[in-house]
Amino acid sequence: MAEKKGFFAEFKEFALKGNVMDMAVGVIIGAAFGNIVTALTDSFINPLIQAITGSTAEDGGVKIGGSFTINGAEFNYGNFISAVVNFLIIALILFCIIKAVNKAMEIGKKKEEEKPAEPPKEEVLLTEIRDLLKERK
Image (cartoon, rainbow, N blue to C red; front, side, top):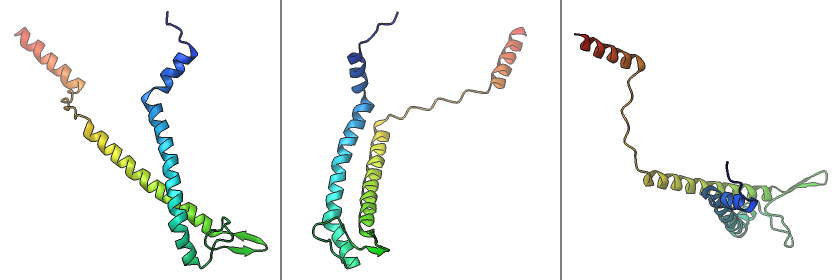
C-alpha cells in the first residue's frame, strides 16, 4: 500500500521541483525587467514622442505625446504608443534570452549516437525464413 504524504510534504515536493522554481525566478526577473523598460520609455522614448508630436505632458499628468478630442472625448495616442514600445522592447529582449537559453541547452546536451534503424518486419521475417531454410539443408 502506498504511503500517504501529508499536505505540507506534498506541497514541498511540488514547490521544490525545478520547473516551479525556474518559473518563479522568471516571474521575478520579468517584473524587475519590466520596471527597467518602463524607466527607459518614461525617460527617453516618451520625450522623443513628445518632441515628434509637438505636445507636452500636462502638470505631471499621464498625458504623453499627442491627443485629439472628438465630441468631448479625448483620445491620447501618446500613451498607446508608449505601451506598444514597452511591449516590443520586452518581447524582443525575452526572445533573445530564450534563443540564448535554447542554444546553451543544445550545447550542454551530449549528442546521442543514432541507433541504426531497425529493419522492417517483413525483412526480419524473411531473414528468419532464410535461416530456417539454411538449417534444413
